[in-house]
Amino acid sequence: MDPQRHAARGPAERGLSIVVPAYNEAHRLPDTLPRLIDYVRQLREPTEIIVVDDGSVDGTSELARTLGRAAGCLTVLQSPENHGKGASVRRGVLAARHPHVLYTDADLSTPIEQAARLRAALAEGADVAIGSRRLAQSDVQVRQPWLRGLAGRTFSRFVSLCLLPGIRDSQCGFKAFRREAARDLFRRQRLTRYSFDAEVLWLARRLGYRVAEIPVVWRNDPRSQIRLMRDSCGMLLDLARIRFNCWTGRYGLGRISSSSAPDPQR
Ligand SMILES: Nc1nc2c(ncn2[C@@H]2O[C@H](COP(=O)(O)OP(=O)(O)O)[C@@H](O)[C@H]2O)c(=O)[nH]1
Ligand SMILES: [Mg+2]
Image 1: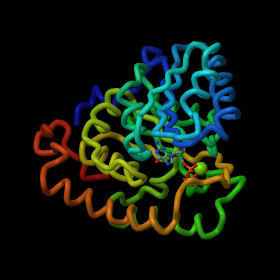
Image 2 (image 1 turned 135 degrees about the vertical axis):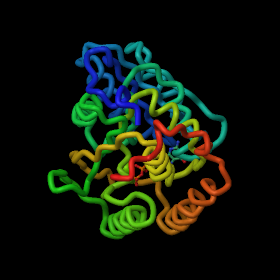
Image 3 (image 1 turned 30 degrees about the vertical axis):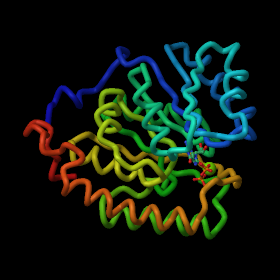
């Protein structure tokens, strides 16, 4: 592993890109975007907000442009068709310009102020810092409905058993990356729907990036777009796809140099 890559990082890394995947979010953006814009204004460092509209049919893009016009820090990337949350996060992350890249769900179930916790972990040497609802210090103030919560916990446990030992919550929609790590990981990403988080974290470990799981606040917004039965089955199939993609060389892992090989301690 390259020690330079993991050295503590200082003020050179000022600058934050916030990516918001948005599928039919016209009902939530009037609350979400002003909160994000207020937050980035307070930071006093280079910032941008990238809304990725994934083929919405409710005027999400137009509304985002209107809400962001005065702020001058908001970009809207619009896809004509729906490609999935994973595809949209990828598009936003690859367009990001600042050294810290964070993605958040449009409902801000994790308040954006929690970004400071993830960025502190990046500043201390992590390449990837993931929000978690399942650590002792996590503060879940409004829970998901019990069936949705049970499905989420079961999936996370399954991911932890099969792919990501030691990671308690792979699915929280609030994650931050150092930009170079993000570009490397999201260029390799293949899954376009909800399991992309697990895929990106699995790739991060395989490539020797340092992943930190950080407790965050969570206030669930009940207006979920996930369709439990359909999406749960698809997500389980996706986990098998990660193994398949690995065997068939689709992640380009054969090109990992010995200096970036996975750390067997993790
Ligand atoms: N781009 C994209 N985003 C999606 C899609 N489905 C959901 N999202 C986004 O994913 C995020 C999480 O969705 P949400 O409904 O809050 O899911 P939950 O809280 O996990 O039940 C939101 O920002 C949605 O707009 C999709 O098909 N494409
Ligand atoms: Mg949500």
